[in-house]
Every structure is written in C-alpha cells, then in structure tokens.
Length: 221
Image (cartoon, rainbow, N blue to C red; front, side, top):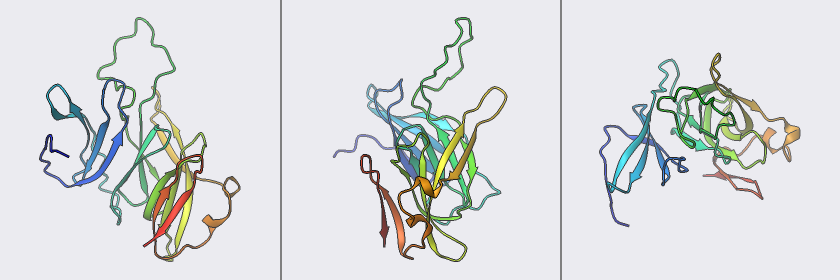
C-alpha cells in the first residue's frame, strides 16, 4: 500500500463507515464523525488525484443528553436505506439514505437547490430507546421489510441482555417532520427465547451473519 493523500483534522475521528457510491459519484464515499460533533463524507477525486469533502452535515450534538459510556458507533442497515449513529445514552440518530423517487416532478416545477443525489445521506432524526448502557449493536439480516437492530445492553441490575428492535421510519412531508421509532420485536417473530434470558457478564460484541443464514454471533471477552 502507498500513501496517496492525507488531511489534518483538528478533532479525533470517532466513527468511520463506507457508503456505496451515490448516483453522481464513480467511487464509494467515506462517512467520518469526530468528537467535536462534526460529520462529513469524503470522496476520492481522480482528476485532482486528491481527497475532497463531498458533503458536510448539520451538527447533531445535544447538550441536554449524556454521552454514551461506550465508544460512538455508526451502522448501515443491510438494505442500504438507513444509517444510525449512537452517540448519547438512550438515543439513536437515524439518517435515511436517499432512494430513487417514485413520484414524477411536474414539468414546470422549479429546480431544487442542492438536491441530494440518490445514495447520499438525508437529514437526521433522533429516536429514544429504553436501553441506556449498550455494549454493542448490529443490524440483522432478518429478511424483514423493516430493519432489525440488535442491542446488547446492561439493565439497571447490571445484568447483560439482548433485545431486538424494529425501525419504523416515516419520511418528512411538506407539513410534518420525519419520525423514527425503534419498537421491540415480538418474541413470536423470533426463533427461540434466548433474548429473554440473562447472558454471560462478559458478553461484549455482536457479529451479524449475512443471509441466507441470517445468524447473530455473540462474543464474550
């Protein structure tokens, strides 16, 4: 490997995630999050042979919330429709990934200013959950129409448990803002009742296995 380019950041990088190439880009994008609550995507410019910022995003810091005791996390669901950020305890930020529009714009509609391209990140929406100390999280390859998020957490009695939540997301309209809710998946939808049992105190990592197996490995370190 050979160093091709470098950039200095006046912050500590806390999150990295690969985003599939948007419709207007020949290469994948790199999502970057810092401890200063700055979020942006980088792209490789082949013509200039250098890195450039594709898009910067609004500050989603929340002074009223307590920062998570674990490292910040960013996840992309297997369907490629959503990214989640875990920065504060009991809060998951949901960022939709722009999909092709199913509605046709009127021929006389004015052009949208700085319209996001298919594959770029949309506006963030915060959703609250009951689990506070989350050790690990992972999207499952469940085959469901709605993304399933597995949360490995400690309850108020310091017992380690696993909970599966389903993301229900309503996109913003001209009269209402977007809404994101993580509802607990009913046990009847799950194979086995392991999720209701107390887990080993050393349980620390969740590793999803892609379809067709669609399994979830639980590691204890």
